[in-house]
Length: 298
Ligand code: NAD
Image 1: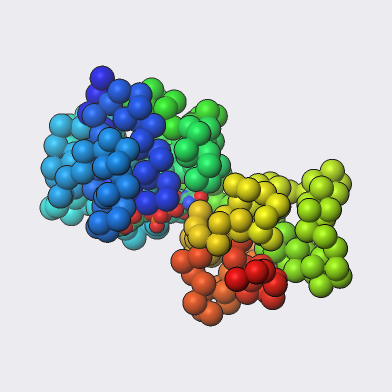
Image 2 (image 1 turned 90 degrees about the horizontal axis):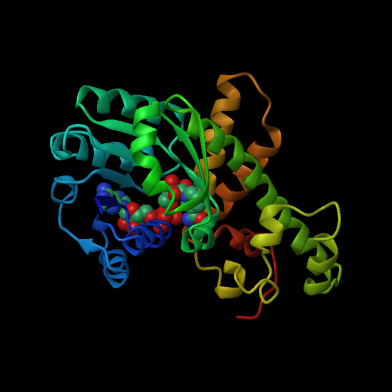
């Protein structure tokens, strides 16, 4: 079995790294927050103090951090992973960071004699826990081949999209649709509530009708209907409003760069930005429904 480093033990990082422990690997993890470190220890991750210590004898180094800023911070520079990984080891970034970050990091990895694969994921915390994530890979074939046996422990659909950055391209397009799907699910749920429609009946009918979408079905934003939706657990993330806002921002920026109108993504971005500005940024994205006026029992 192999040595794996895992940097970023948050909502996704803990269940994903736990699956690698389960598969028999030694996983050395790092996070800047103690509750995250504690959660990872409870799953058998050997928590260490520094990135250098985690990656020193790693075959593969995973990052699962909020954005490109954090990923660049932990991978590059004198204390970063690239400087301390064994030559020939591969860094696999599962965060959603955008195309440019992935391409820059792949280039810096090459200069340091290590590999890099952008491998953003879809499927949420539930998919991470069940090891059923979809992974979208960008990078050189030999780096992907090194990473693949490990990826099989965290996901069930692994697609090598193309060169560095192409995994991010696929993910950003996917999340433009997720963001719009979530936003429309939230506003429609509030309207349904105002119209006096029973939430269970609303869910049962729409999931058999043309208004259905993945966000509505999986993360139904009114409590008590879908037991695994964060809305049924006090709107605790899950997938934070700030992270969905970030992903919609990546999509609208690419739309501007490539001259594609992204009006619905821009409108969803604004809704999540408003909820974030109102103080809900750390809550699950289903909490947009609360921001839009959903009435729920305290
Ligand atoms: P999260 O905020 O729960 O986890 C990130 C972790 O990184 C936190 O524990 C934080 O303390 C840690 N961290 C921050 N800076 C660090 C540093 N310098 N060194 C070490 N640790 C550091 O976020 P998440 O929900 O796990 O999402 C991670 C990434 O995956 C994001 O890019 C997100 O967009 C993407 N994603 C999330 C979901 C989801 O459902 N949550 C699904 C698919 C993709």
